[in-house]
Length: 314
Image (cartoon, rainbow, N blue to C red):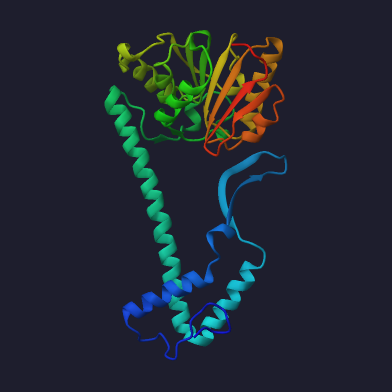
């Protein structure tokens, strides 16, 4: 028997003092009844801005439920109080909340474990140190944009390898530039392709030293490009190299710096029109590149965005 078509089963006995199995069954029933179906939830990324319009926080994820969902949940809680009593309803709320938190924490640990395993696999395979996460101190970086930097974490080398394989370029004609190169996993992965030159741009000298050491440790037999340079520089002050380019970005900085980098690339392109390909992993600020009229998006994706200049220069 259901209470007024609410989807909540009506029981003649309250839950207080019920067995653990019955309590668990009731918790599952309420959980399925209270929460809207997954398709009614949409995830959106919010960027808070100061009065001057600068980003101060990114990647804050909120769940925006359909209109009226909150009111519906309140009604169901009220009905549950009538059916089960306030004490039992409170216990069920706590049980559901604890279950949700446990699942969330479990998913975070699972993702972290996958990342750590990939880090270990890459480093053991090539005898280098590119794993872990690093947040540079303000005192160890070059330039005024420390506040806009995002922590270092090595990219997924398999994904980058696949992207470099799939793009339609003659690698020998292109310079590979990694903005926010960190410990150098991106440039090491790129070195397995016959690029004309590879440049890592990083504003932390401590990370640059690790990257340079990794370049020396990386086996020469695996390098198809041996002209590798690691530059300590602020991304917005780094001069865009001449000639065809493949630019790699693994979410290295926030919108103000990204906007200026796009402008620098645009200026360089208009001064010297040529083929420029951008590989943007975890593209939080993809809209900045989409607004660049000299580029076109060739691969829209949640995790990887690829942009290309709109001329047929190979």
